[in-house]
Amino acid sequence: MHAVVVTRPGGPEVLKYQEVPTPVVKPGWTRIKVGGFGINHSEVFTREGKSPSVQFPRILGIEVVGTIDETSAPEQFQVGQTVVSLMGEMGRAFDGSYAEYVLLPNTQIYPVTTDLDWAHLAAVPETFYTAFGIYQSLQLHDGERVLIRAATSGVGVAILKLMKASGMDLTVSGTTRSDRKDVALTALGIDQVIHTPNANQLPPTVGEFDKVVDLIGPSAVRDSLEHTAEFGIVSSTGELGGVWTLDGFDPIMDIPNNRYLTGFYSGDVDAAHVQALFDFITSHDVDVTPEKVFKLAETRAAHEYLATSAGLGKVVVLP
Image (cartoon, rainbow, N blue to C red; front, side):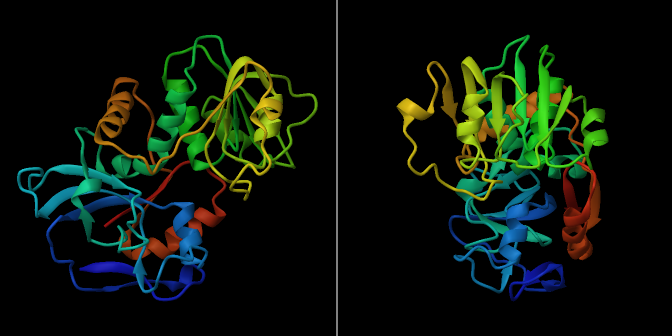
């Protein structure tokens, strides 16, 4: 089969399109014929050598959509069945989706019912699964004021799309460090763009919000809580601020009275939640159109585009 292999850490040039042996099915595993996959920033970090546990050579790719090609569990899967997989250790402890076929543990393969074509389907798994988990955790209601910190990130854009498609009357604001993507955010329906040269600190003139999506993470959580209205919710999901833990955090003193702090871990995947996501996309006509589509042989170009794009949305690859 053809695959994109990384033999050493580095820039996009280390992504090599070449022939490799097609993986052989073994007990507890199933081979997926790859229909498509999205490009994720975590894969860029791994390519650059910033994932210490990953050993090279490695085929990257933490998500995939495709069909069952051969399985060790015929009672569980049917050949030709449409499936999704994300997270686990694919693309890290074992080879991932940057290929024509990928071998995955049976426990992390999720059949889905959907009418989406491969390009739209490939734009969904990791990004929209995370966004949907955050969306549900916020317990949104009509008339609420919502803030998305890092609104131009992939998950930020996906949450904005889910909120705008929900039919609820929400006023959605979003932060960004520059005005480079203001026009694109406005086109997606955002109500207010807030420029934050310091991503960890909202401008002093910014008021309170009923719900806050904090994709900056621990480095900004205290600031987010200070801008949350009484009985509001902050969902801290992501570490775009480069800080992983809330060191010295005192829940009594750092969470203002009658505010709530939660999060969502996309590594906790289950089949029911995956199908609920696709049902929501269908019933609410959520726009999951990818920003740009590449071929497998163009995966290096896809990585380069992700680093330079001024647009918003998912970059996907279709073998």
